[in-house]
Length: 487
View 1 (cartoon, rainbow, N blue to C red):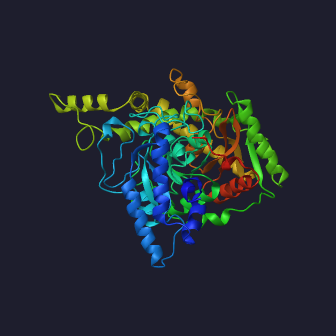
View 2 (cartoon, helix red, strand yellow):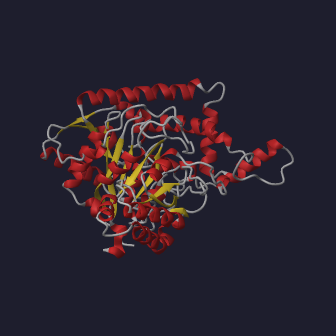
View 3 (cartoon, rainbow, N blue to C red):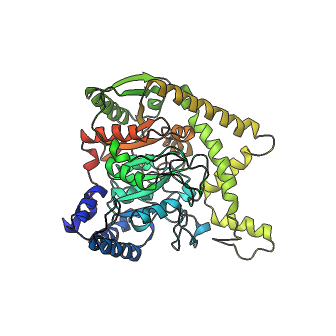
């Protein structure tokens, strides 16, 4: 067991540490060796921090020796998506424009993980500035799917999902703007939670689209998801959008019980482009839940069809504004040889940003420009309100909505490089929850050609407890989350 600690879940590692069967240093060393062994193939990490993890582990072992109570994440190796500030550690957003940026403060979620005693093994790769669905848009290198190294891991939190699937960390943090936690979790066969907007502080998250971004956990099972969510959720005075509400113990929601649960199955999520094998895998689980006492009904949510176009107006508009700060003046890349300030701005941004980021900045700037604001941005916000009202209406009748996480399993690296529309369709099922600001979780529900299939559960705002209950029940009656890629 001691030489394969990396295969264990967070809660299994916690039990071993608590009973002193292993030390935190042993756990840290085991994961560091695992990263050394497999990350050359997977390429989950932009930066690894083995010295920091061992230093943190020694502090945990000293606390255990003194008889101090052990928190659920104490001594557990985790990884951080490289768009969250880590004090003194490179935070690049996988962009050349931030290739040398070392923040002077920790993001609130990083600080909270530190307070919980978690170990940091590194910063994970992403689509540059979290813009993409495959982790191929990284300014440094693509990440590979641990289940098949020729396939993408999904995006933008592809490095975070691949690291968990490859057992390079026990859990990771991702950020989700249009599906960037759930879609890679689906492609990599792990659990990914996008919380209600405002449940988790965004302070120290390098912003993409501020009204959509939300940080959440990527884990090996649902229990771990609840444990990590317990640690990072809560009001933060540094983030005015974080909600001032009580944070319950989400592990208390982990019950094998769906009797009387009402499930909505919107036909729009199973429409054109959904792989029939993906649809079958999801509907098999819905039928299983019905056998356990739940009820389901097919419904229509017509506004969902507008999710993709609405998202690709609002998100680029907000990114156009947020990314204006990267200009070569205060931090990151500064282009050399410019004759004046404006030329330096232009050259720095031209050299520092990748093609996808430039495209989205241009689309967003156009949508916000005089004469087009009302026609595009304002109209998109109105349709967003319609979509949110559609969800509110559905949740008057149903406890949860169940859909595929993504219309397909992971596709080949480079396969959609010349088909941007097909690439964006990978997020068609996940985007609506971001636009509505409501929580959603992706869990494994099957395989096709050796690649994981993900199922998405959506609940009304602030009802993560029902998400966890349903996801946990599914997990108790299936084995998909226990399967491991062969690396």
